[in-house]
Image (cartoon, rainbow, N blue to C red; front, top):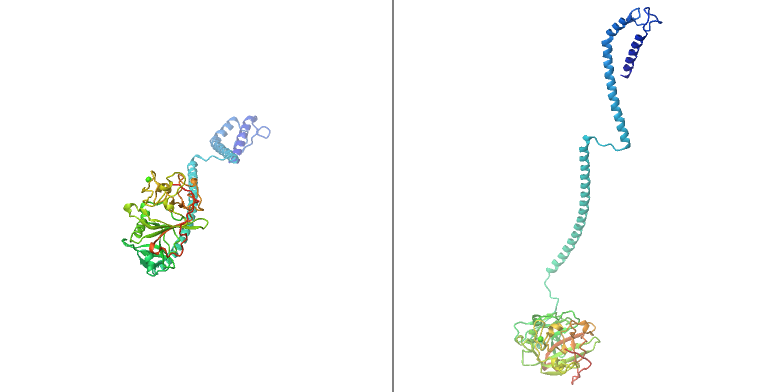
Length: 437
Ligand SMILES: [Ca+2]
């Protein structure tokens, strides 16, 4: 189209030149600028030119309109091209804004990308959780396997006949002495049934080679049992009996009552002590009896037989008050626990000292007290500043707690058969201790 446009322009220029240079009737190259066969053999006159123009007017007008159309088209194309070039330049220099029609799809794409990213994160997190759960599952599976193995072992054990691991001797009697009288010669656990007892119960019998047999009522040796118990617990007994007598316990006030009052034959009570240096001592009391519960398990005995531990049950003069000895004696005292105050004190001795005992106001001998390793203790070690250890004031200070202590009884008739009497006949009493109540 560009070539046709130029041809049209040259043609118009030729016509205009011809009109302005017409001057002669004889056409030649000098006077006729246009020698065109369409004008014949003459130079075209004004009319000729007019006819010529009229003849070609329609054609020329058509051509002109055609050329005008071409020009408009070229102009539009040029404008479009300019816009495209400008846009391309802008694209080269800065981000091209999305056409209006592209905004929604782009926004949708971005939203979709955000969603995809979010889902990817969720998937990653879930994969991590799944891995953790898998590890827990594996751990639990291992535990289950171990438990199944243990169950299998236990099932095999359960299919075997039940066997008591604690050896209980076959002999029985109303007390350990009767057990020994029937032939028992081995110390250990025996069932006894005092005359008034409704049922038999287990005790540790300490049987001497001579056949004399002690029934053990109480034992302290390592502090493994808490002796701060209530009335019912002291009544029924607590702690643990063992075939080797290596555990701590209180046999129980009701059992002690049944044992000690079952016949006219009096019992001897022996107190055995050991300090933290390994020194041992005893204190024996004749005709020991423990009253019934209705009399609050009252302690009575006839007299002090002897023993190098001294007669702490008779009280001790601590030097604080002239009445010390009277108010720390134990013969005739009822039993007290923190929940049953039967003492002679305005306060509650059992509660203050954390034990059950035949409290007066309060004590000179106190074998159910708190266990203090190494023995020596002080007011600052206690609650309220009370001497609450395992005390025997006629042998050691009130601020010295025994390493071991025990209480046991034997019929007076067999008392002389003891193989291990540890005191002289005059029952020499130690005086190094000081205590209070
Ligand atoms: Ca009281």
